[in-house]
Length: 360
Image 1 (cartoon, one colour):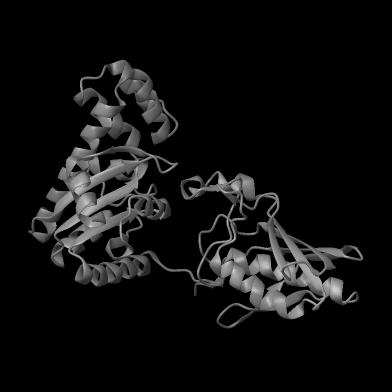
Image 2 (cartoon, one colour):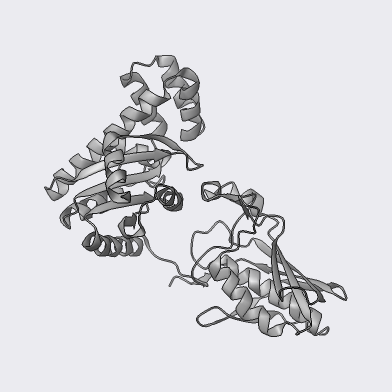
């Protein structure tokens, strides 16, 4: 049976609480920390703990997300904690090495994580003291390179993000069913839906002033959810996603998991030829390391605008035909492609029409 684990904020708070207790109770060498994870409680193992001097201590936990495929598994989370005389506030949170910062320089510690810190640390802080907590993720900067954090405006590391302390594993079927239920709820509110492919799609949607009531998460199940939208009488779907994912639809690949198929460079190179590009240009695309690299190569050749414009149109056509084939209904589909940083690559005319309609 699949095992649940905990999200990254839980381990950060556990490290901080262990270090604080070490400062307040010098002989406290506990190996587990009990936390209020809002709601419920969790016992978190402490790997190491040490007082650095009379007013500071360091504690370490290891991330355990359970049976989820999570890149933070076993990564160490350090909390450096310092006591000092009371300042303007009792608890100060800082970003150390590997914990990301927003573009305004603030620590990437979001609402749920802040609530966890408050619930578990504030009751322990003496009335005349202030506690500074600096969260350090020694592997955070490296791991962040494997995420889309920059599209969220999170720089130089990972974030303490999430709405729950429990990291519950879901099977592929569970995930698809969850997205189907969300779609069915959303289409009752709005006949015009926005499919956000990946977490960075949510950020781009926000920048386009697209209301949350229209946004449907999809994971990799574009085909199944397009058909679901058609069967539940959606009027339109705006496909909003990273170009390296959505381009697969132009090749007739409607489950975008790279474990099933990954022909994006081949699809882009075929589009180069269809757009009148040379065999040399197509080969440059095929030799690119990523879809974004291929895009940059085509910018240098002066072909990017035409190639990706054609691809956006083709994606929408393929999606419309897919729904007609499997649901026997007509669904208007528009496509908006962006890069890893959330910057627009291309869109078709239907996408702009839908954005104007939905965001108005």
